[in-house]
Length: 265
Ligand SMILES: [Zn+2]
Image (cartoon, rainbow, N blue to C red; front, side, top):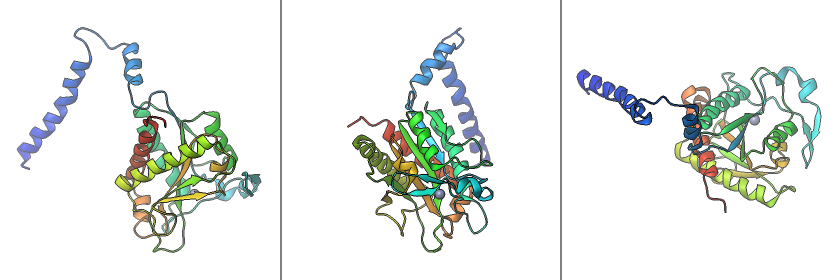
C-alpha cells in the first residue's frame, strides 16, 4: 500500500466512529444515563456473572506457613494453596495467571458481564483453594474459570488442556454445565488460542480430575484452563508475551461467551 493510500485508509477508519456516534444520538439530544443503561442491557453478557480465579499468588512462595495449612477438598487433604510453576526464564505462573485474568476481565466487562476475581493483586498470599471455590458459589456465578499454566518438566511436552470436575457429589446440573463450559473453552482455545492441544495430558484437550478443591467444592459450572507447559520451548514464549496472553484471554472469553449465550438444554 502506498503512503497516500495508507493515509486515506487511516482517515476512513477515523471517520467511521464519528459517523456512528452521530447516528447513535438523536439530533439535538444528549445521551442520558437511561440510554447508557439500555445500551449495557443489550450487551451479550448483560446480567451474567463470571468468576475468574487467577491460580496461586505472588506471595505464596515466601509464606508456606500460611499456604501449607491443610484443607479438605472433598476427596483428600491438601495444602491451602500452591506456589505454582515458572518458565525457565523465571516468569511465574502466578504472574501469568494474574495478567491473563485482568485482560479477560476487561473483555468480559466490555460484553456486559459482571466479573468477580478471587484475588485483588499478585503480591498477596492465597486465598486457600477452598475459598476460591466459595467465591464462585457466593457470587452465584453463571460460569467460573480458574486460570493456570502447567509446569511439566519434560520440555517436549506442550500444549493446552482444560480440566473438568469429576463427580464427587456436586449436582448433576453443575457437572453437565461444567462439561459444556469446558468443551466450549477447549473449542475456542483450539480455534484461536496461542498454543496447540496438549500432546501429553488428557484427550483432545480435556481431562477430568477429582483432586482439585476449586472443582470439587464448586456449586457453579467451573473448569480450569492450563494454557501450556511453561518449560516447553514452543509454549513459554506465548506465556511470557503480552501478545500470547491476549490470544489466551480472547479465546477463553470467546468460550465463555459461547457457553453463556447458549440456550439452556
Ligand atoms: Zn497452577
